[in-house]
Length: 335
Image (cartoon, rainbow, N blue to C red; front, side):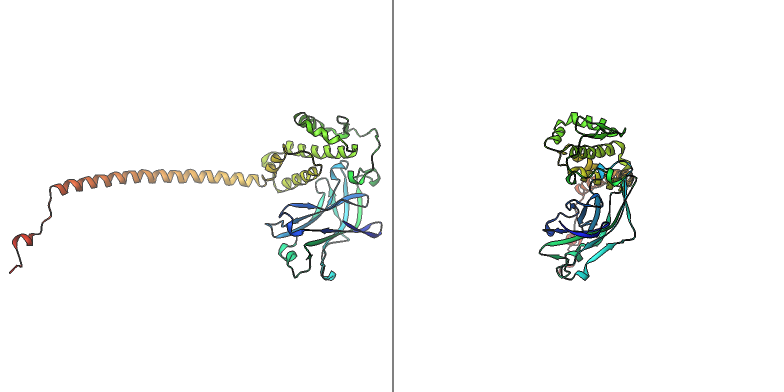
């Protein structure tokens, strides 16, 4: 990660050089290192092949979203660029310095699902990729906090110094198993899973208190989401939100093998109502087709019986009949 110093306090450009680009998994998230701009932790997120493997996607994301207090929001104006390494003037940039996007708990990443066609990006003559390296830049023009003061915000663990133990005055958080301050609404869920999976408590070993708080808050968000949703609620928006909180939790490197199947199953339930309706129609169609097949089988069985009867009648008739040539008997036509 190469950072270019900003010209002023509200503007900063960060470049991310992505090596071995061709080996990146298609339609899978890939993250940059975390960087700080405007007293906020950010990271870039890309997808090599977002739409049926045909589109290159780029997003700017708040890296410490799970650590922020309830009701947080950030207005950030930014642009994203794929650098043309042959000619800088041919670089592709999208974004507006004058139109900020609002980052919040429900929308903590903004960007472009179709930034450019993957075929264009990978074209050897385009200049966007050299030596299997792709360079992506983000330029933040302004960062404005709403609802909370920047100085009162907790930051991402990788950007924080070891925090002092301060008694929380927030009634919405409690000290969870001496691991840190966790929102009350997450505690029953966390206690339950910790009783089932005691290895989760190993998270605290050789880790800072702030890191542990972040990890269990991220886990609490995922558990609360799953508990509060039914399969029919998993529309495209819900699936995207679950994907985001899950990807954040995966950064903790906890053993999540017990939870991963359920999350993936939930994410794959996008369009549940449409799928359920399709299944219903297919079942109805199967009933109709099976009824038609039954009728055909009955008709076939009846026809086979008639064929067998006709065959027997023919055999009986042939036993009482010998085919003869009358001309041969009379001798007609012989000299």
